[in-house]
Image (cartoon, rainbow, N blue to C red; front, side):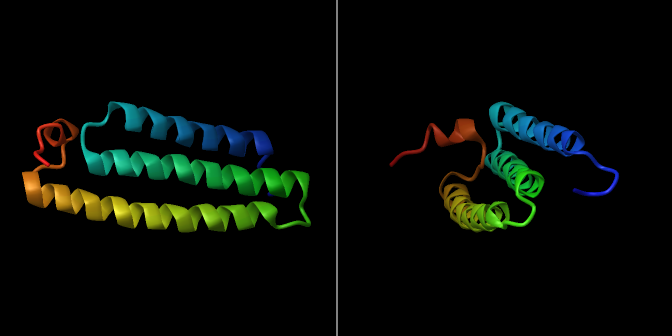
Length: 105
């Protein structure tokens, strides 16, 4: 493990990051802020995968492989979400959630 830092401290930090992301996802009204909150949630889960793998099986790399896969999926999700947000902004002139409800299809 990392010298001087216990697994409990790392899991506490990642839990705080996860719940900050959940709180931001629930309370934010801006689509960009919601996307940032989703990224916080995904990054907290990536750190958890790596730390738990390092703690349980220090010689294996399954946690790192899962982390790389999650990062790749998050990058693709972010690119798609940003393109959708840009398209919404061009159509309705706003990135607020309440303004997307009045959009005509």
